[in-house]
Image (cartoon, rainbow, N blue to C red):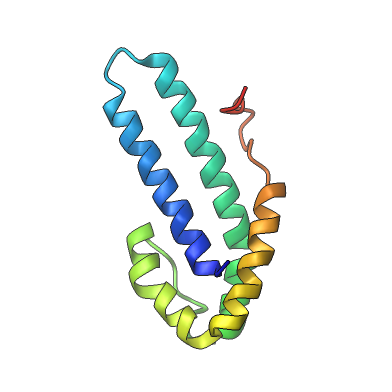
Length: 119
């Protein structure tokens, strides 16, 4: 899987969870609690693979983006991902995506001692 495609899928997953949270209604406390736990797990794993694998590789492959700080998911997808895609190429992004997908399965998901969404 392409590394950028994987990160975009993560963004979509989190966006869907936020929509589920909003649609749950004001009295759906247990449901909202589970959704929040899922969001924390998803974002923790996502941040882990970005910080430990993607960003270092992207910075090495696209040195002009080294100082670039991402302000939002939208900025990341619209501005930075296309630069990285051009500079790294399809094969490298495929390799990187496979590495990230494997690491995501092993990534920490409990940054604050919050119970797992699957518990």
